[in-house]
Image 1 (cartoon, rainbow, N blue to C red):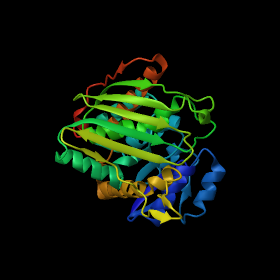
Image 2: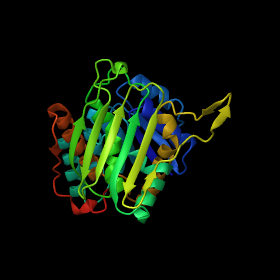
Image 3: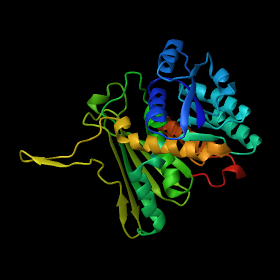
Image 4: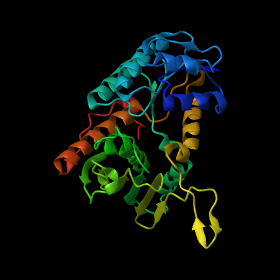
Length: 337
């Protein structure tokens, strides 16, 4: 049984704890911690035998913890991932790996110095059944070489603290990672187009269109609409030389009644990607059981996504095309993306 310690018991932390205690196999939550000690204590009350630690570092050092799940506030990710590497413990880190390129680079360098993979980043789209089916079609060659991809990332609404650049750093970063994985190559340049502003966005510039260029010359456009009201809608279509492939409709039931055709739309990301999160964490647990190493999105993937995200923010600010420059990829990540 893999004994996991969870750093951060907020919304996503509690959801992963629920997942590990009621859905997954081969794992137990042995320890928790949170900057809000009362929240951590309350969560632990529902976890027989779980220890509440005062800090993330104390949890990571606990000999009763085999692996770590980091669900804390983004700016704290670097310190907990680095502490996990120093302790030689596998660590699953919710996105982002870290909030700056420099922090991600330090994590990559620490893991390379360790000599083997310990880090996995929570890019759950790679575990979604629809995205995996789409990638299988692209990889099969049935539509020829992929030339373009059209994406949409639509939220019904976003919290009051959501800021302009979060459309890229918090929202479109999922597409950034997905595109690298889908095409199996790095993103080399980015730009941002600014359409007419929606009245629903308040002070935000909403929507935005992100345009990504890949190493082979493929072009990917991503519509980012975060106050579109009607629901949470994720779309993707790859255009190849000899055909196209798109994500299918994800509703299990289509209703025809009262002269209407109704297909329910997910309310938010938790509803849309619930199963992907289950698969993601189960595959992580299975990969590290018995001293194995994680095989999912790596520290390099987290670093590359951060660099592209930073370049896209620069493109948004400056209104021009920005090239993406990555450091040389270490041999440890030869199979990344």
